[in-house]
Image (cartoon, rainbow, N blue to C red; front, side, top):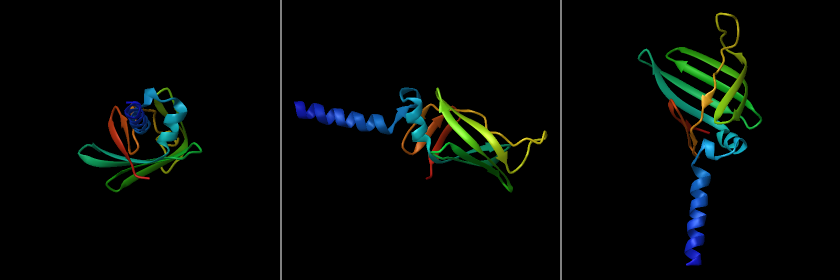
Length: 128
């Protein structure tokens, strides 16, 4: 009976460590789980938009959004706090009408798995 309890406890530990809602993990654990390259797609005016977000362990990020022949890349620093992935954009390949880098707004993180992230907008897949 004790052996079964140990097996069940080990199984629950593995499941808990691979798929946890972001709110169940502390900020440092979630930030570490987010390090890597993430990709997702959506549509704008009927055209597919491809997104790629790379989060480095040292706090740097690179974000690329591409639609048909248009592409913009932004870069800077990222952090995670209280369920939100936040960005401080320091540069971009194109500028907004006011001459500032094109920034990336905060993203609410609902769940982090080993190969996916769930946000209110949908899922991103880990590619690296």
